Image (cartoon, rainbow, N blue to C red):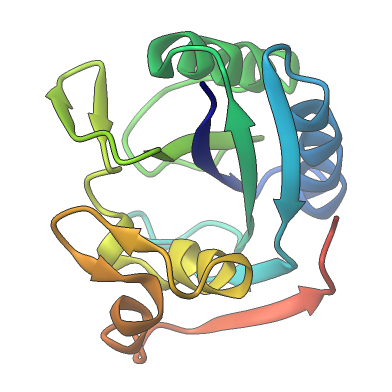
Length: 164
């Protein structure tokens, strides 16, 4: 049985628009998944380490047959193909892929926390997610559209229409 999954994409090194667009294509080809849709691309200011380039963000919806840990490993593999190197938290990156939701799963496992622990606080995730699934219910948090309203003070700009 497949699970409805949402993946956040972000990049701010190199050509982040091209990177996020290419990563969406890579997500289309993941085994044991069906690509459903992708949001538009958004530009956002960095969170945490502020003296770095703006990020380009998007969210993709997939239907996955593979387990959440298997899907997460596939996302790490895509990040590695795009040159992702993990250094300090919130550092600039070539590509960041976060598994936001895996069906209605709730997990506090240190390797995979579901729903993603900060998704409800970040406009750069909520705005693209609200574009493709505004009525989606985040377990333990509420509806995406309502959560986005609580982040109204965070700057986000749609720069390219839906990447489909």
